[in-house]
Every structure is written in C-alpha cells, then in structure tokens.
Image (cartoon, rainbow, N blue to C red):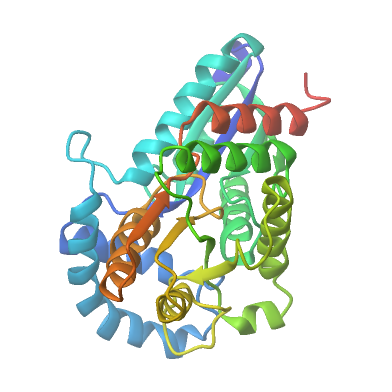
Length: 334
C-alpha cells in the first residue's frame, strides 16, 4: 500500500520565491547563476548562441562580483541569504497559523535549494492530495510566475499519481497587499523628521521586447502603482514608478531608477524614499542594489536624505495578506 494512503488528506501550500545561492563563494554563485540564466523564460535566446557566452564569459567573471555583493547582505548567523531566511520565516509563521485547518505549508526556491521538486515530493508524501502553488511575485511575468509553473508541471510529469494543483496568477492590486504596503510606508515615514519629496516605487526591470511579445508585467506594475497612489492620495509626480536591475544590451523598461535619481539631484531634490513593491522579501536587489548602490548614488550627487522602506517580509501584515490569498485560493477544497 502507498504510504500516502495511511495519512489524513491535507492541503499543501508551496510558497516559491526566485532563488538563492547556497553560499557566497565562486562555485556556489556560479551554480546558481548557471541554473537561473539557462532558463529560456529568463533569457529568450537560442541556447546555441547563449550558452557559450554564459558558460564562457559571464560565469567566469560575474560570480566574483556577485559573491562580494552577497557577502555584504548574507545572514552569517543562519548562513543563508536574506531571501531564504525571510521566505522560510513566512512559511513557518503561516504553518503555525494554519495548522488546525490541516494545511501543510512549505517553501522552495525556483533556482537553488530547497528545490520545487524536493518540496512538492515532500508535500505529496505527507498526504497532500491538493496543493496550492503560491509564487511570491505580486506582479505576473513569464520570467517569474510562469517559470515556477513550468517547473511544477515538469515535476508532476514524473508522478504516476498526481495531486490536484492550483496556481496563483498574481496579486498586483489585491486590497490586503495594497493596504499592507500603505501601512508600512506610513510607519516608516512617521520615523522621519522631514517627509521625503518623492517616494519612488522601484520594480525589477524587464527587457522591452518581452513586453512587446505579450508579457503583461509592465501593466501589472502600473496596476500596483496606481492602486498604491490612490491609497496614499499621491500623484504620479510625488510617487513615480521606476525600474531597476538592467542587465545586458537590450532596451529595458523605463524610466531607470539611476537616471531618475540623477535627474532629481539636478533639480535640487534632497530627500527621497524608495520602496520595492515587486518583492515580498528583501533580497540582494533591495538590500544591496537599492539600499547600498542607489543610496550612494543619491548622496554622492548632493542628496541629503535617502530612506529605504523595507519589503513586507514576515511583518504581520504580510502574513495576513498571504493567509487571505490562501483562504481565497483553496475555496472548495475545505
């Protein structure tokens, strides 16, 4: 008899975030980047053309620089990246809150460990006949949400007995998401002696040709920005949308945050705040890129006060949001 038949049926929930290296050393970073940048959803180029460039040039040079960046934000106590620590905390807190509903919550990384395959297998072996896949990307993109789903269904192809699966599209303007962002912004601003002249909404960039091909990511980012401005009664000028993390020669979505910061300092703007509503957890792109690189850029050009507003992370408002999404998405299963 299959071991799953001896267990009380449960509902599984798998939180999935982008990914993380296992360490800050060259080979850990190289393995992670190779997996990430080999995904054809992420880099839409022919493998025949791309792989020699990736494996030869990029992976010979980039891991050294990226390793130094990870070293600055690495959680030494737990020997994990911030993304792994926070995602694990989110899952464990949810598990405590949802245990009495026979819901089993786990977490995985699309690239790196713990893998989607390992965690799906664990949930299945725990007796979860129904599993909700919850990508931790508020805005849908084929480069993020879709590649999580790709990996889930690749794993399912290996199962003779497959669990029922539900996938989450996005939560770009979910009322609880917008309310959580609003409250965290207000909480942070209350600690400042003077209000910032601009609050930048910084989203991870995407090559423009992906959007031209039909990716809805840009629309999703604008949906979040519009809802948040409305909640805080701000204008586009007061709360502009910008993009970060350009990579490669492609034309990317704009405006780019570095260009906007340079423009602001040229106009005499001296106090800005930045929040990253495309991330549910602080990571390299927020702690190192925004709170370090762009802070230095702003201050070096004459800015006086740069405020970074952290992601929702494992704040009670984040847990409330995720519980609400789970409750909505598993309706009919309980």
